[in-house]
Image (tube, rainbow, N blue to C red):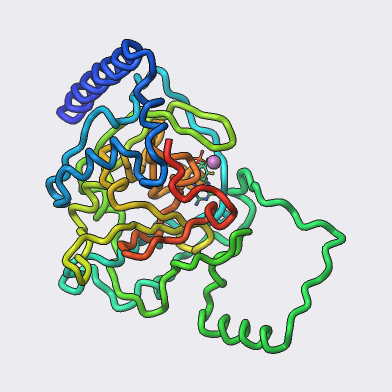
Length: 330
Ligand SMILES: Nc1nc2c(c(=O)[nH]1)N[C@H]1C(S)=C(S)[C@@H](COP(=O)(O)O)O[C@H]1N2
Ligand SMILES: [Mo]
């Protein structure tokens, strides 16, 4: 079919490109990727990448330097990704209850999917717990830990907070706690369905996934480009007439969350993933929607995205709260 031919063409092109990049690296004595690794980390975005993306700040015309692409591989080199990290995924989501919240979009109120309070959306979960356990890196509390001394005033505040939450459990139930970037009740935005996402052009890609724990795997991904999503649901400009600097994402229950520079989200390989290894993605890998960013470590590749928010405030990040680098670039 047409789509297959197109995919094939693209993968031939990509393979050739990977080969050229590898050859250039070998000829230079240093791998190209080693060279970008050494660029000044203070810049947040690695220098060559930053330069490439700065060529044109206008969203629709973002020019990208191909040399900064992560290497791509043949599908035959890929394998099924292991499951690692289950924060925000411990209960199975009822697929029909999924919505993607989008906050900070330009002219959002005029969009047919606009609602006055995206936080009011009720995600439904399958009752039985423990089915989607996977690997939990949280350390169990020691038996000798003293019981916390909860002050009555604190307990009262907590009660009121829970009441305000209604039937919803409190957000941020894992070790890092609640995100500083979690939305205030009453935040307006879009509530999209998966159809609103998958109607964007579909792409496939075979890239390496790297976890900071020291393992990596070559994975075959399918989904839509985050850049295409951002073009379809563009961010509102700030008071200075500029695009917001950051993008914030979190799971529907707020237990896992990540922040990114908008420019990294515009990278052509930053992908909103719906398929892995040629099949619809499983919930423990983040279905219906997870992020793959081959320019970043795995902990930035959030599974089960419930919210995409554009913001000028540097977003909170689950693993940064526990001492890991916010940027996490490769
Ligand atoms: N919601 C959520 N996303 C997450 C995590 C998590 O615990 N919860 N762990 C991260 C880490 S550290 C890794 S290595 C990858 C693992 O993705 P996988 O389970 O598909 O291999 O997911 C990332 N995204
Ligand atoms: Mo990881």
